[in-house]
Amino acid sequence: MKTVHDIRRSNARKLRDGVGGNSSFATMIDREPTQTSRFMGDGATKNIGDSMARHIEKCFDLPVGWLDQEHQTTNITKNLMFQLLTNK
Image 1 (cartoon, rainbow, N blue to C red):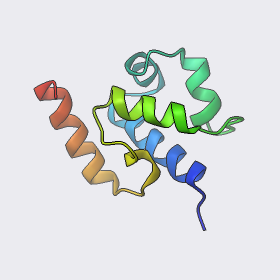
Image 2 (image 1 turned 90 degrees about the vertical axis):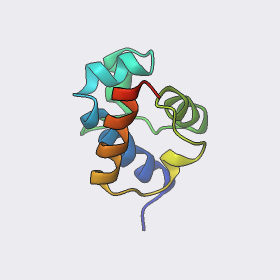
Image 3 (image 1 turned 45 degrees about the horizontal axis):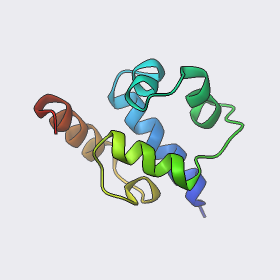
């Protein structure tokens, strides 16, 4: 069974991939790429805590709690691209 930390990491990675990689993701959430690698990299050493999860959701204009729920990759990519293209 996946923990909330596993789900958050998986969703954050999907968001990262949707915006073109770690540097773009880090810029969008106003963090350094090295910091985001610590909680999303292959050998992640940190979990995404509640405040960081809410911060990521806010930066991506997602509803509170979105990062804590499992989502299909295709839906994430479509929704993310729509938001980025329409600045919503």
